[in-house]
Length: 160
Image (cartoon, rainbow, N blue to C red; front, side, top):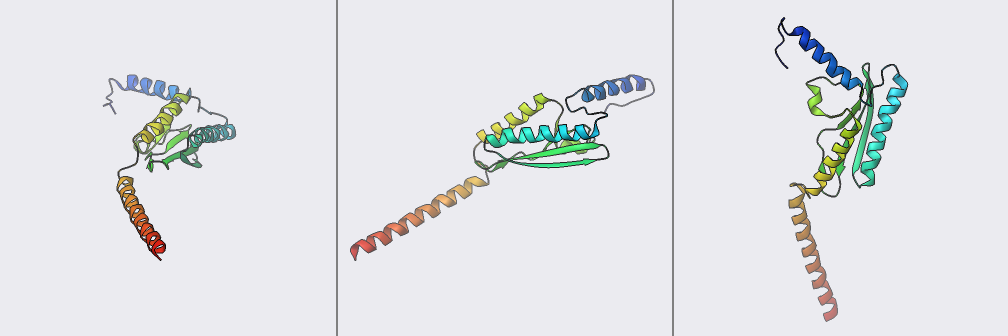
C-alpha cells in the first residue's frame, strides 16, 4: 500500500473509490438485491463446477455468507494426477480484505473463470504429483510380485 500523506490523500482516496467502483461494475455486483445476489453467486459457482466436472475434475462447493454478503468457494482436485489447486476459487460480491485475499483465487469477472479453468487444465498436464510417483512405482512392484506369484502357482498346478 502506498504511503498516504496529507498532500496526496485526496488523490489516493479518489483512486481507491475508482478501484472500488470498478469492482462493483463486475458481473457479481448485487447491490440492493440480497436474495438475487446469493442466487447469482451460487449459480455461477455451480455452473463453473459443472464445467470442471464434465472434464473429469472432482469439485467441491461451499456456499457461505456473512453480513457483508454471500460467498461460494470452489475447490478443484484432479483424480487422474492427484493434484489440486491449493486455494479455493471464491465467488462473492465483497472482498475478504487484503490479508485474507491471498488465500483464495477471487472471481471478479467471467474472464476469471476461463483463467481458472485453464489453471486446472494446466495442472492436469503436469502429470502425476511427486507424492504419487513413488506410489506408482510401489504399485508396479506389487503387481510384478503378484504376477510372479500367480505364474508360480500356475506352473505348480500344471506340474501336478
